[in-house]
Image 1: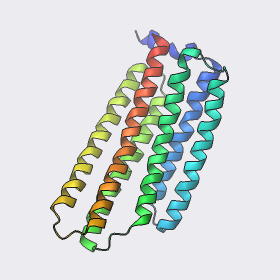
Image 2: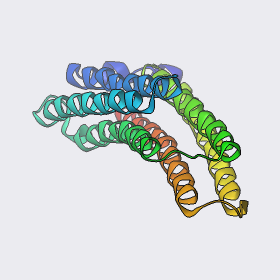
Image 3: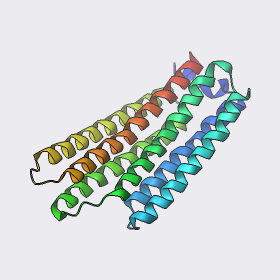
Length: 215
């Protein structure tokens, strides 16, 4: 069984292997974005840097999409590979959307701000973890190990759900919170959760590709 599982690399064409290898560039862009969000730079600087990374990711996806649709891969893998790279790009889009929301509104109440910043920091750490696991998954040569990585990403996403629920509870139960702050908390909770959801979706797309190659 293990020998059969390890055959998938031999079944990849040069174009398919290159595209899968290049797609990890998108994930590394995501890790760079999480590092920027955790940095001590001003919000304006963070927004500019993450916006540039979002554009870079779009360029990578554009180039890979052209290669996928130009006949460089097996026809039965075209849709799945396009889904993979677009889902990975959605991770970067979600990180950019989160950064943009954070730049639009500042919570001025110190107690509330400290709580939300702590929750947000945990979210960003989880996003970095999920992206690192995705890279391991996409560079593995063992389908069983890929499945284990997929399970790890699911656990990370579930931890993110707990943080999202905690942020919702905090917003609902603070009776002295103003509407703008309430709405802002909800937005960043949803946008942070989108990052992890897209990481999980990307792991599903990749595992589907690898499973179809060896089946």
